[in-house]
Image (tube, rainbow, N blue to C red; front, side, top):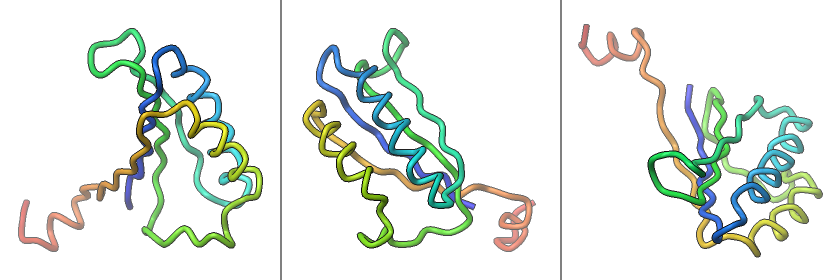
Length: 106
């Protein structure tokens, strides 16, 4: 199982608008069968300000082929890009007791 996280560094004053668009993008992918995502922001908290995150889990990491991108995502993404300083993706492998055993740990 993997955790996938989108990190959207927004221009000052735009983080909540970016978070809204990230939520809509997640919903479009969820309608296509991707697991439910969560959207959260760092605004007003310790850490880097003006950052919105979208995070979800999935059993495998597969290419996101252009033919599988919902049409609405292209429009929403273009709108969001105009409010961003950067847009990154992070991948994490979940640690399970089975995976630890496979590696001779625990």
